[in-house]
Length: 102
Image (tube, rainbow, N blue to C red; front, side):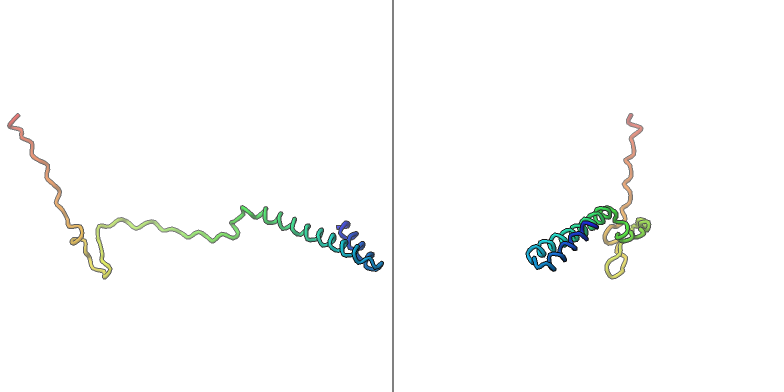
């Protein structure tokens, strides 16, 4: 900070003495240091918050348990079409073994 104050004082002294070219350079140096310090601080802040997304993240929604499976099928009009799409099929009977032939 003291270094920046010295540059500002140098700028003022050059303006008062009439050295406009030197005053312009002193002004650029003082401004460059001030902007550089602000940029360094901003870099530190960004680097510190780069992976800390909890503060800006949307809350995660609560997920309900999935609905139980159903065998009923409904068309867009709300009519039950289960029998039309997947009619019930009776389970196939196992072939009877021929016990007498053995």
